[in-house]
Image 1: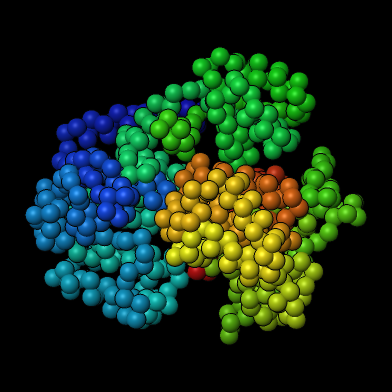
Image 2: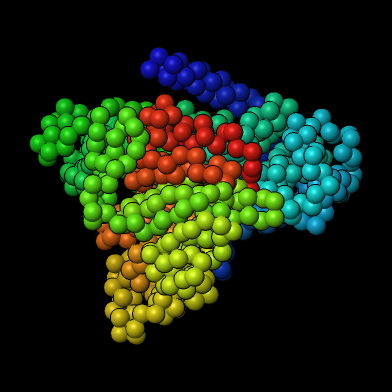
Length: 330
Length: 272
């Protein structure tokens, strides 16, 4: 409990600092009212999206498949034209100045897009050469990641393991020392251990002053970013620091557990005083209608329903709770 | 401390101190039985003497890091890959000799492949129903029922490609259990969907389990591991742990499955 409190205090201080910081800092990415539709306007992939990313920041776009994350990345990396709205990267317009932007940003798409039949070393050299530089010149930036690949430097990229491919793709996106790094779902389908490792790498890149825009469908990764945008169906539902988004959660949240979780969920969902009930691992997360029902009442009513080993506690919402709450309000 | 876990028609007695299972209800039947199941690719042992059982009506979580050997093991159990050594039966059929029988009695769904995008909803249902050998009459009834319960009446004649991902996944799951298989294999079924749809998907899983269909599921979401009756965690080709989520947390002094997984898989030498 104590360490948890300390963490919240730290997060709060950090959140305030980063808000102040973002007010005075240079904007590396600016997006104003971007709209992008496909199928003759039938599918609105990006619907009036606006946000800013400050210099040196780690900014996360958090949302499921089809939320519009990849379209936003492709617009910002000048690979796709928006239908309307404007956007700039490092002060350059994504439409007019596309050539300058392409020279200055690094992009790691969701799909593995290195040359499968070039070796590790050849891929890295190739990308350095394309950007008019050498591996030696920027080696300090990729060194920590590349040393892990070095034993396999003569292996073809197509023959690498998933984790290794991901590391090589990151090296190739970094080798020209980009001002802004775009990472589209770098951790999708990756196990918990490798995901943790990848975020450690991002942290150390951030310390070297690179601005990073990253997207992920994993809500638990959101707290590792300084600012996040929660995105669903092409629209941003909320943008803020993770701490502030959690603080804005409108209800008191309870975690409930009993011996029969399935029956408990049905009982909670059928209770008119319960506003929402979602399963979260070994607990159900529950909010109450208008805050009318008190925890004691809930305990009594559930005990009357014959639930044993009942455990109820008030908890701090996670980003996933916030995300589902925002979805519900739409 | 002792507790009993109801699984399908049977009961499983879990003795916490021992972390062993004792089956005391003869109704409890085995749907998967793997005994030292091994697959070698040259010098590389992808799955190394994998031994475990899955019981009827159970939701069994098959976890592991990328490259731990999950897909290899699953392919052998589905009759798609011949083991190098060891024995296994799925739905009572031998993985060496009765692979066609296995395929008829299982359902399969993965995030990567499940439905044909350029067929309509109804065409997909009829295609897969036909493959699984449902009669025309039975299939017609089943498709109407399915479209009704999934609320897809207005979308029945639309291409699957035009459906939102969440609907696709619910449809894919329903198609995979259309023929009421003994067991359904779900390979990362909830990857990429929003958190509400992900939970709705699990409602479908529970419903199928209640009908007696055994669920064999892989996932990278550790909260979903908690929804399983039992979980195995594979590391470097070997099943390192197998128990109920509660027992695993106790055994590894962890507060969450995330922590259990991390403790076990951290030492892994292989990746995908």
